Image (cartoon, rainbow, N blue to C red):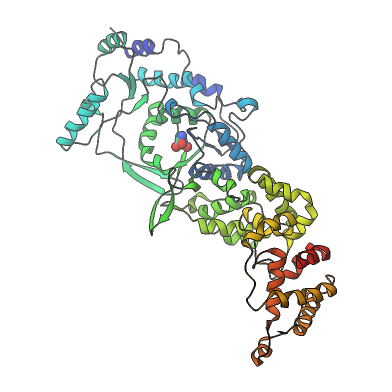
Length: 545
Ligand code: GLU
């Protein structure tokens, strides 16, 4: 007589270890919080992956726990070669420390709970499935695509809950003899979990951010091992998070409906389930409606977008923290010097229905961050950014670092601070006119002078102004002098005077002239500060042009 154990041995002749053996190989950890991020390396890194990774990372590290990375590469068709490196690079750039994973030299594993890449864990999954088969809780299945499809059609026609379960599963009730002979005839099969098939049963479980959740229990005989021998997500989740000793599974909401199945699987192995927290999807508003952030349509779905566009890493993280916790911004305002590592997050506070990605908010958070940091930090960060994304800007910034810093620093941290930098890209526009060669390039887009400023009037004014220019005065004295010289040339010093009539214009027109002539722009930081940084000689040369 053929037994279930015979079937298990036929399928997995080389598997001799038990789950208990594996558990002693990967013993319980001393940390009370162990979380992970488990990306599938299938292309660019989605903001959503980073977002849940950030939550898991903070949740672990704020409790001196472990945050590890596991690469979920069982869908071999969709793999992208460079994706793992990119994921690790991005976590590194944003200073989210990963303590275990394929993070060593040339992707070697660091940590005692590996391998950390699913495709290298096949033998471990086999121990789990062999156990299920021995217990009668899994069976091989040869149902073809067309058999599955016609079962579905039949169920739809009869208005029966669709799925492969109970008697709809053609191999579920075969005898071990029938299965044994089929294995010999056709080694191409999947392995299905044998679920109860009560479609009315409900299950209640606890989600860390949602509280009690009640759902229809799983009744499907889902596939646990695919025909290529690799596990599906479901089995891999049970085996990996058990052996890696994950305490908290923080993952996307798309997995919420799989929790009943996962709890059933943990039960089938008599293993404790971790705590779950399901993260709401990132949404975006379009034409007044909310929709999921799309990998195809939305550039900001790609993590690289933020660096390319010149957002500071800390700005991006602070922005994501405002989505994670609506009180973050207020807390941040009262502690402006704190780093994001200093904030604790509370999973119970997560918005469980959606998380809205708002580009305007991102800009404002980044602007606040860039406005807060020292000019030295602003220079260093933007230089690092420019070296990667705008080499020509980096070359300019490096010509005279002190000059550049002085230019960047105008009005920063003063009461009048116009918070000029929303992203590092703004540095480019705000810096160029300080450099003579770059200013030449701006000539083409130089704004026109006010009409009342004819070249004759202007040259007379310039002749006198350049004679008397003094950049060591106080701003008040400097402006008083401009008024005085202007008045001699027919420019009223205030509105009231101007209204009396007989003037060519006002002092403000002359300030605008200086601005346009010196900077080739009509909007610049504080004019006198700009002139002081340009220096007397440069100012005179530019005015005489
Ligand atoms: N690879 C899965 C995903 O990217 C991981 C989900 C999980 O964290 O368990 O959705």
